[in-house]
Image (cartoon, rainbow, N blue to C red; front, side, top):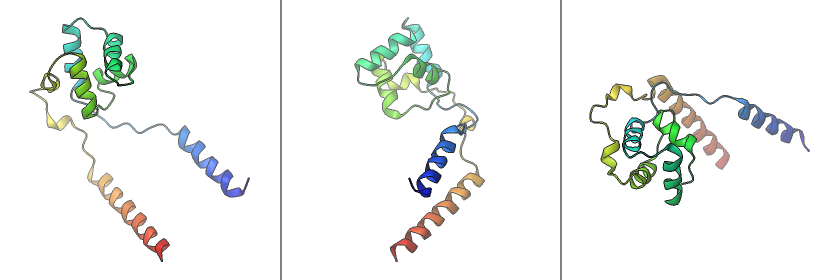
Length: 130
């Protein structure tokens, strides 16, 4: 194995050992109302996961708990499956009183850092094409 391969493996080992950065605030706005609808229908989290699995979504009770606890983001198609599994409209999961200040929008510093990184990558790609 070449030296470069060892260095690459070290990089991936460090990457795997890093804890993911979590953003402050809730990761979704639907969790509380998914839990409410599920509870009103007398359906357990494992049973809801099973209903979603029948509809084609590979999901576990832990994922349902993460959604309801606002610790997991929810894709739009996942909301559609949750609504179908609970035999309700998607609108039942959308809070009327949601405060937009609860959404953890990226900071200006974060966005500027992303722009600089993108510019560096583009410059590198242009140099490699020459």
